[in-house]
Length: 115
Image 1: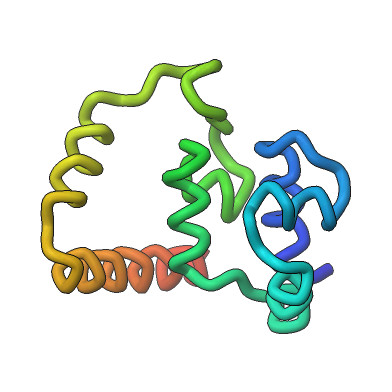
Image 2 (image 1 turned 90 degrees about the horizontal axis):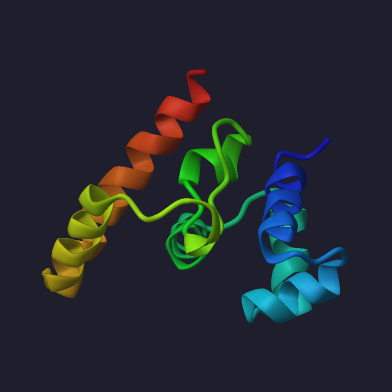
């Protein structure tokens, strides 16, 4: 099985959709984009982080399925510490955001590969 399949299934679960077509509509991407991700067996890191933040789903759950899934504020209130981090991140320049984002994602994926 491809590595991307369980991630797409978890995104479908978060968005409460069943088909790829519904998924592309909810994510606001074209079907050809989804097809490219499937062929490459990879979703761009930036998009994964975007989905994680937008749908308030922990990145580790999205990538591995481990831990708990949070969907909006319906099941679990947002952690104030996380909210503070996000607020401070938004105050940074775009250059600093890109640097920190790249550093974080690189370390995250390196750690996941070592599991």
